[in-house]
Length: 145
Image (cartoon, rainbow, N blue to C red):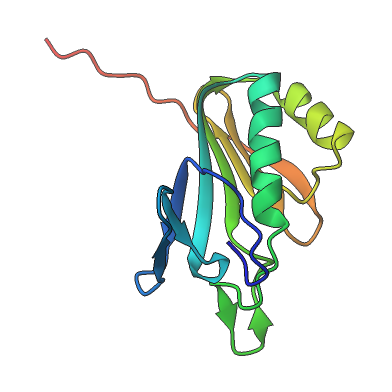
């Protein structure tokens, strides 16, 4: 929730400051002020094109919050524009599918990190506002005799 009362709805996982206040409204889940949120993580078992769109719509609500004092800042000003927005998935879409969907929806600044365990990690480079693939290594298990 932001200072203007805008809400994101339910989120899969949030990482908050240890001193962030928790607001509880009758009949609703806990609500946290945007200023106290470090990161929002949407978790998908299989990141299909449709699940990417779903996560995009959710994280767009997070991006669009009016956060006056970001959780990460330095003496010279904020280090970035709000909570980190992450998608985590076990399996999922190809890089070309991700890039096509991001371009089609004008989401170039929406995702800070997309991690698909069987594909790799895609990270937004903040200065250039585009995704760059950062490969991860796959380790095979050793067979013990």
